[in-house]
Structure formats: C-alpha cells, structure tokens
Amino acid sequence: MTADSAPAGHGVDVDALLLVSFGGPEGPQDVLPFLRNVTRGRNVPDERLAEVAAHYDHFGGRSPINDQNRALLRALRERLAPLPVYWGNRNWAPYLTDTVARMRADGVRRAACFVTAAFASYSGCRQYREDLAAALGEAGPGAPDLVKLRLFFDHPGFVEPMVDHCVRALGELPEPVRAGAPLVFTAHALPLAQAVASGPDGGAYERQLRAAAAVIAERVGRRVGGRHPWQLAYCSRSGPPHVPWLEPDVNDALVALATGGAGSAVIVPVGFVSDHMEVVYDLDVEAAGTARRHGLAVARAGTVGTDPRFVDMVADLLAERRFPGWERPALSTEGPAHDVCPLHCCDPARPDPGTGTAAAGGTGAGGTRGPGGPGGRRPAAAGVPADLHVHGPG
Image 1 (cartoon, rainbow, N blue to C red):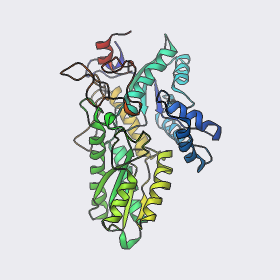
Image 2 (cartoon, helix red, strand yellow):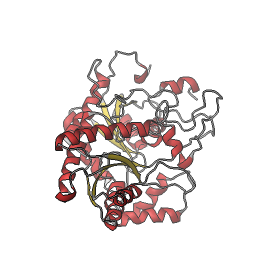
Image 3 (spheres, rainbow, N blue to C red):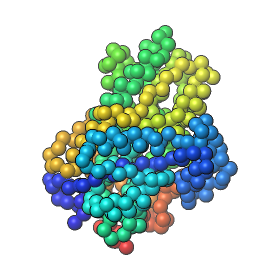
Image 4 (spheres, rainbow, N blue to C red):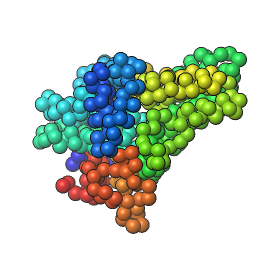
C-alpha cells in the first residue's frame, strides 16, 4: 500500500521533505539550454527562444528563482529541523531526478513534496506529479515513496502575507490617486484548453485565483478602511497567436483602466510565490512601462517569499498529512484542496464521460497534452493511485 492510498484517518509517516520547483538559469550560458528544457517537445523555434532569452539580459542572464528557492530551503531547514529537507527542479539543476537519486542513496523511505505552485493546473500540479514519477522511475528499486502536499491558494499562510504586501503597495501610490485604487491580480497565462481542464471537474485554475483574490481584496479593504475594486489578468503568454489563451493580458487590463479614467492601480502577482522572471520582467518592466505610457501610476505588491507565515504554512501542510485530525485551514469556499488528486485531475486529454474520447478543448495547445494522443494513457503520476489503478502499472 502506498502512502497516498492509506485509509482515511491514518497519518502518513515521512522522514524528509522535498522542495519542488521550476528552476532557472544561473548565468548567460544557461539561458538557451534552460529555455530548450522548458519547451522540449513543443517545436518552439530558436528565434522565439532568443526573444525570451533577451528578457534575462536585463538581469545579467540570471533568473532570480534559484536564489529564492535557496532562501526558502534555508528557512524550511531551520523551521523543520531535524527533518532533512531536499530541493529538486523540473527544468534546471538541481534536477528532480538527481535529487531523488540522492535521497535514495541517503536512505530516505518516504518524503513529503512541497511544490511552489499554489493553484491547480497541468503545469502547476499534474506535470510536477509526472516529474516526480519519472524521477522515481530513474532512481529504480529502493527509491522513496513521494507524497505531494495539497495546494495552498487560500491558506492563511499564503493569503495574509499577500494582504500585507497589497497594503504596503497602496501606500506607495501618490496620495491623490490612492483611494479606491484598483487591485489587478496577475497570474501566469495558460492555454484555454489547459485552464478548462484544470482540477478534477474543470475550471479550477480561474476559480481558485478568483477565490484567493476576493479574500485578499476583502481583507485589504478592511485594513485600509475603504473598498478597492479588483480584477484578474494574466501575464507571460508564450504560445502561438492562433491558440486561445486566458485573457485579459495584464497590459491590456492596465490600458483599459487608464482609458476608463483610473489614476492608479496596484499589480498583485498572486499567481507567484516569489519574484520569478515573470514578475521582475513581465510586470516590473513591461507592465510598469505600459502603465507609465498611459499615465497610470502603479505599484507592485510583493510576493510571499520566505515570510515566516508562509514557512509555517509548509510545516502545517506537512502536519496535515502526518497527524490525523490536524486543522486544515482555508479562507474561501474553494478550499481546502484535496490531498490525493482524483483520476484525470488537471488532464487536458481526459476522456469525455459520454464518449470515452478526449474532452473538447483537450487539444494539447501549448504543449499540454501528454503522450498517447486523445484519450491515451498519460504518464503515471505520483500520488494519484486512481490513475495507477485504472491504467495498470505498465
């Protein structure tokens, strides 16, 4: 019996935590190889990769994400000691495959996995589970069981630091345009097919984003004593123009606010847990530039980073799995998220219940379809025993 198939009410014994993240280049020589890792199998031409690589030139060819993960790793090791804490990435060193092999060599039997993505989607949840499964396959016999911790989009340890950052950003706006300034919550854009398929029943990515944004905006209003309207926008679209993606783009949203008479706005990167390249370039450079050109004063709210409440949240998510009856806080009606992902959760190629074939919209746009084509078997995902049960072990 695997850890994730243990009967309800039984705690899961773990002897390590694995911090799982996206990864990023450490220097100019790494940028194109990193981008090829990210886009592998999607036939993205090098010319397009060179356009994206130019974003990294603003920061010396180095993504901030690995340094931010190192800081989070230090904070988690201090908070969870003596429990060992490891770190592995999807797209750059330290790679998950290498880290799981090291855990096997160190004798780790079962590790809880904290993924630095708060919201349900293929790339933010299911693909990480597939990455974990692939790493287990490479490690071979003796590899540890891996137990993915639940999504945390409306956990107080994520929401409350974001409220503080919004209040602080409002204070940075010019006083004459501060009152009632709109909050523009931003997250990574997804192909529409991937967004539609997110979660066990579809549409979870947008629902969870809106739920988190609504809670944050309401608490900001309470803190400052005034209402601030809010909206959801997206950044960092990278797909071909003919493929539908989530909208509006944050730049379009800012232009619309300025055209509609707004004097200011706060950009809130709710879809990111630290200042990734999508934050420091797509928001701080591109979106801020758009706002300036249209006479809109903007301030950007911070991300949770290593806020002690966020670090405590990881400890709480771990305790939820280890100790039956542990409190599972959630500040919206969307949560708390499930521990074990149901069959076809976040799967753009999920079969339509009526036909047994891939659901409409599961076109694989933006590289979201796995091997096997419509209705085909996707890679076994760690922590999804329903997938393994239905499809068999092979």
